[in-house]
Image (tube, rainbow, N blue to C red; front, side, top):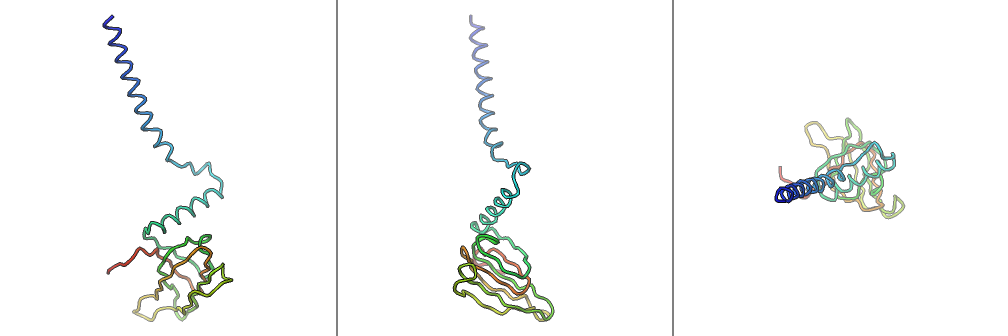
Length: 151
């Protein structure tokens, strides 16, 4: 009789160990994302959500973009940025920010151009809220603003 109880206790301990391991492994498996099973729209939404979260957390990142118009909350995440003009040679253009998808009030206007020899590229601090339109007449980069930085 004693050996039966001993084996029951051992069996219960083994079962408890298996359940504990499964409980620890299931959340780890649930956190993984299977990109191959996602549609193109789902992947683009995930990318947009990740970019928005990077901006929200203030994780320093820089994106290089061609000249053009961009809508905050759609083509670029809302947030605060350092705009850097990437014009070269004699190239120059306007940097403008408008509210309401470009149909509202002009929030910012700045002429930007290529730096002279030995100078740093021109930078401008901008904040883009949902629906703001950023227009740049030259290639540029946006760096997520994380606060004051010392060099």
